[in-house]
Length: 417
Ligand code: AMP
Ligand code: MG
Image (cartoon, rainbow, N blue to C red):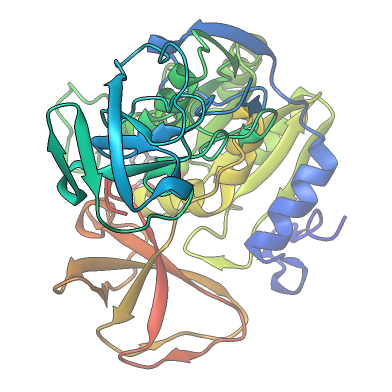
């Protein structure tokens, strides 16, 4: 496969062999053939955040019969205008006992089911009621002020697709359909291993040349947001054999592994070699024609995905969101992709052709539209992900985007859509 031999021994990446990220992920997924995740059943109350393992269909018409959309009088439209005898009241939760005949009407509340014989509702404001009689002065068309049977959902209609993430809207319709137990995909367990001699724990004092292992937490948070169970394994030093040992211990406990750091081609970068020492097929793609994030590793050990992210926090997060996300979605069974925000570019952007660029931007609301201010890419920046609220993608052939152009931004900040 193109891209597999993108590393020249002793000379780093062979740029002519690198694949653009979109192409790489497609090639990797085709090679990996990740099986659909298993199913489990959860109570409706615990289903939020999970992915539907089966499509959901309406079990009958909703509403089951015609229902009023107004407080008023149900009657036969053909009898209007006219004077109607009020034959009774429709009660909520009950069908009206007996139908109505010519010249008759019944009082009906919003949501009440129409009695047989009635085919329209006249709102209370358009009727003049006096004792047992109601005067309707204008003609009303059939089906006025009502929801017909099946207007909301038709018997057998597909309402929710498989792989849809369950949120409040999905919970609402599942409850309406009486689905108290929901078939969802099992959460994949994804392990995280950070490596680097310079790394110390988040609770430790970091010397001037040391770095706190922030990726371990950031990657775990991102994986959980994407619907995985994330398990961080102990941080590993850049010593031959250590990463092999850590991967070897973690892999049997996980469905996939994400590795942070050591993914490039320097002498201290042990990740690709460690993966290859552990089995077949090993590294499938090493290096992407992308900035930041070139030293990304797509690998498989047996059938399990092993993905190596660059250690730089900005690169790691951008690659995870922009490139690895579809692999994670295949593991979770998610049929959803990131929603993009349309924004106007606040400053002109120029980019070197031949590379895909992920440009962090700061989005701000400008009275109903978003403005996107590009931030300078420093992939080694630890604070850039927090300063950015999203990023935009510049394709290989694009060398400039004018100020004021409409761009699509993928949000990084939660809730920003
Ligand atoms: P590497 O990909 O191993 O070459 O690491 C590149 C740079 O990323 C390092 O010099 C560190 O500054 C930073 N880095 C590596 N691993 C982590 C991590 N787990 N958390 C935060 N920063 C890291
Ligand atoms: Mg390193």
